[in-house]
Amino acid sequence: MVHIEGCNEIYKHILETDARIVVCYGGRDSGKSYFVGGQYVPHMLCGEEKFRGMAVRKVHATHRDSCYMEVLDGLETIYEEGAEKKDEQYKAIYSPMEIRHSNGNKIIFRGLDEPRKLKSLKGLNFIWVEEAEDLTQEEFSELAMLLRGEGKQQIVLTFNPVDEGHFANGTFVESVADEVKETFPNGEKKVWVKYLSAEVDGHEHRTKALCLRTTYEDNAYITIHRKAMIEQLAKTDPFLYDVYRLGKFGTRGGRILTNIEERDFAMDGLRFSEFEKRGYAQDFGFNHANCILALAERDNHLYVFEELYGSKKDTAEWIDEAEKRKLEKRLQMVCDSAEPDRIKTWVRAGYRATGAKKGAGSVGAQIDRLKRFEKIYINCECVNTLREAREWKWQQDRNGRYIDVPMNTNDDAMAAMRYGCELFPEGGTGMMSVGREMRR
Image (cartoon, rainbow, N blue to C red; front, side, top):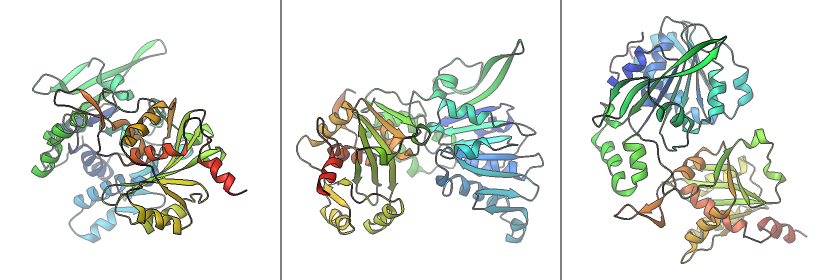
């Protein structure tokens, strides 16, 4: 059994279990990702037992500033006594991204956007899926099948429960627990065991799953300032309060977009260039996120192909990013009209940037247009757009009734999607046709 000094008490259940599946979900700042990436994985890398691990996120590139650094920081803590000793014990490799220990143990970092690289892996006995709210039932099953290495085999999911439709809710949470190990003061289960049964060669085989629902109260190291930020959600967003404070699965009540569906566009053979009606939409930001979406429409279905999403970049840097991603300058780009100077900068760079129409009722009209699409398909690689679309809610009045005013927090991709409605007017030919006429 792994022993970790300074480990938050609730995570000792994970250290002591022989469960093949660990479902660790809950609120913000509960320490779940830090425990797995910064403590559990580093100690197993340094241990005597054979360890062949893999950390998984939806998009491979996002590991660099998350899981990869979390594990490295954990190793730094273990070997903080002298740089020479540290350098002798483990080696961090950036390409391909992996960390090797001198004892032969290692962990690699992969993305679900690289399915072919995943299927060829052999010898894994541990998988950590970070931000597993983006994981589908099919992807979970495929990852679990990769556990065939020597020694103890385990797959660990860590995530915030933003969508009650997530497969983990029905499979592990809503179903009756086989054994409850710890409860909340109100009697709700907090740590429990669930067995998944299957018939193998005429006999019942049970796979053990350990489930934990955590909150910031489980983190002995959280600051009062972080607690206050989370508690403020009780006044500003009851839905996110349930998710990020109480660690409960978010309910669909009040959700604005109920017609969204996640798809793997590459697997489905969908290509942006093959759509006649297509273009870009942009919501400007610096301290909050700047978002550019590549959008297409066909048969009253909206397709979100690509997102450029991030903060702390000026307009010139976003134009450089657009050049790297090879955004097509001949296509229309509808932008937030509140920032005409930025629009002019994009125009000078050769893009067909225009301001979105704004006025009384424009937000409501844009939302109505989004809701009238039969389906909004979002590429699985657009993780921020997926997250925002799932969390986008109507505001509530003092009596808890939903009103026709959207929440205006964490909605940068949703703002871009709203502006993008101008690309595809109902009954119209779409902006792409206008561009084609201009070139004749």
